[in-house]
Image 1 (tube, rainbow, N blue to C red):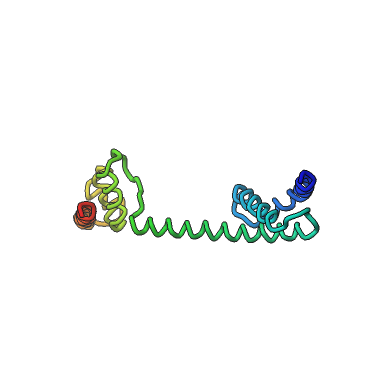
Image 2 (image 1 turned 60 degrees about the vertical axis):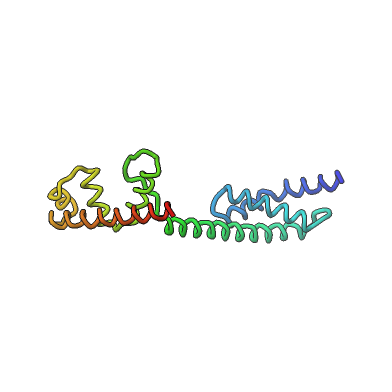
Length: 170
């Protein structure tokens, strides 16, 4: 058994550089390459019981490629699920400093759900302490348009917050 272990160690010392180079080319980061190489070597060892021979290198390359594909698919699926969850729940963006409580979180979620043209006017009015004339200048719109966007935005914000409250209370 010790002799077999020594043969695999020798094989690994001889081929690890080439295998790692291939793993780096197949993955998106160094850490992913290391993980893929480790998984592929374990699969290769389990598949090819006995002493390593000429076919083992080819099998290792095949396993690296397959493990890299599996990892990339897994990462892509996770990213799609996380993006969908963000879309479903509303992105948590911290535009302003508020205490970390349920009200602040609800406000941040509600702000992320209203249209940007309303959001920017509300932000400039409440947290920017701007007048409607100043907001109009900043955004290149009339003061009346800024005032109406503020009203519509506040109403949209109220609806979002009321809906949140109803969903939480249910």
